[in-house]
Image (cartoon, rainbow, N blue to C red; front, side, top):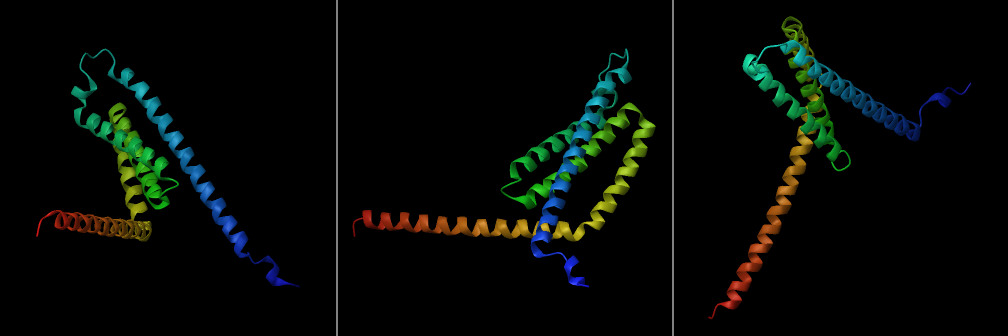
Length: 181
């Protein structure tokens, strides 16, 4: 029997990584669709919660509404950044994807807090536990991504600094040539 026949080859390993990346991408896309539809559904229920009250939700639930608006802006902003950076900088796109998922679920929990306060507080408590667990499990991954982003930023800064030095040398050289001796 040939036991080595079932071992993965490098090309099949790369294919499985690509499949995993595609599956991860499609699963986060599905999560974004679910989050967006849930946020929209709860937003449609907010007027029902408000009822015949004359006061705005920004008056009755000022802090949760402001937090919801900020979380929603962060969600859509980081989602847009993820989409724009997907091909240029996959590390940044991955970070933006995680930020958008966290802020989207937080916005959803804030909407629950506004609509059904008891359930909203419970959802925020569970979300906090999930956040702490996710951050503690992915600490090394986060540190690696931040390190790579820092290194690429430092390289870009060094390159820009070299270009500025060359520019100033050229300007000083032209000024020296233009001044009479």
